[in-house]
Length: 342
Image 1: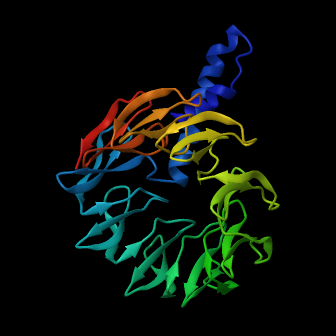
Image 2: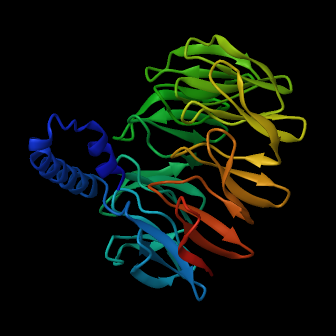
Image 3: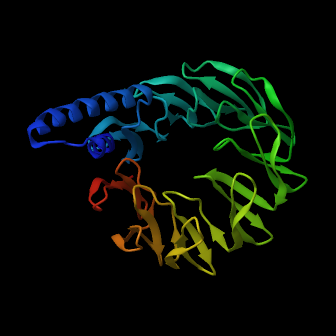
């Protein structure tokens, strides 16, 4: 549906006599785009569900695609979904067939053709065929991003490439993953950023720092949080008690015990009046009032009233919500596509 809307916004009907032609062109282009999306990222149209204590997958219209049969399941990525059977993790494909036998104590989703797996407290990487292509030799490991992955050997972190070669030596007290070309690391208890060559792009001046989103990253100096740009310049002074990341031009902030939203110029767009707040996606954000979560629009107005015990951000038109110990999916109108179940 997002693809159809995308093309519809960009097709200009120059005259009424050509409207049928352009309408057909729009439909054709949309179908091609949707086909390409499924080909390049199969499984994104499937979502995990739980019923009668077991996990399966539904389509985005709420129909069951893979009947519940797993002890646990997570979302698809690159045509594979982590699934658990007999307390061990493997992977299923979009038909529900188990293509990587459950044998691992821990797995991540696939990213750039690789998934992290763990057995006997050692981490390595498998490919989409389930072959162990980077041996289990690390004390911790993260997913690949921008062709590199951070790995831990004993007490220090470095980065490997997709051949398993250590391209940034193990030397950091902590390392995350590359986001927008930079990765945060800890050097002598201070946070800094590396570029992909291993050079320090932003020197260790911070007590903590997060990933870059939309060109800005959250940093902590003493007990307060603010934002820096990719040059390391502080663009929003550390003065907040809590901060989210920028999504769709807005970031959640906390003052005292309440949350609101600021823009990139540090203007308060939505006052701090919520007890918790998530990121904006698809022009809506989950917020909590008291014990219940609902959704607001970019003006701060509730578009779905606080009804849920927990709620995630929207993705491709749906959000996951929790009611008591049951989980379901709603659309932007608050209508259940999958009623809460467990």
